[in-house]
Image (cartoon, rainbow, N blue to C red; front, side):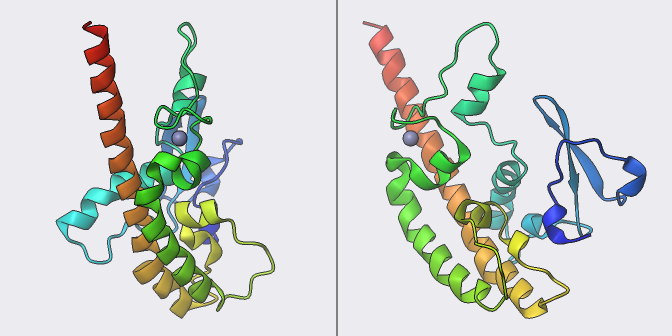
Length: 196
Ligand SMILES: [Zn+2]
């Protein structure tokens, strides 16, 4: 099974056809099926397995499996009470994954240094793989392994694993922390105002 099928669709899945490493991940309309290509998917493997890196894995996996809750998810879950999908940080657009990772201006300072490293290294590494399809930046950040076939090019797979994936993981971890810090600040200001 190629590595880019790690996130399968919500379509009907015959469990007998899946390898033992398949797991179910709950989503708002049931379950999404994830198939781990290896004993552990490379996204979850920390190259330098120290505590600092291990802490980043849950955020990284939540984002790559579509389980990281943004404002648009909250809005689509809410039934009785209205929740706006608009980004609470900038208030300028719906908080989608693309907005959070690539566009929100309030996260720009956190994003730019790592994003430029991802672009530099990503273009160098992926240039070695003959691809006839365009590389989607958001997809690259969410799962850089989707463009690399371990069987076709082991060296590129290892570079992705050792260089590109840690950068993407670091970016998402930093963005997550910055977003939470900003949201906490907004909540604090909100409760201060409501005390007057
Ligand atoms: Zn925003």
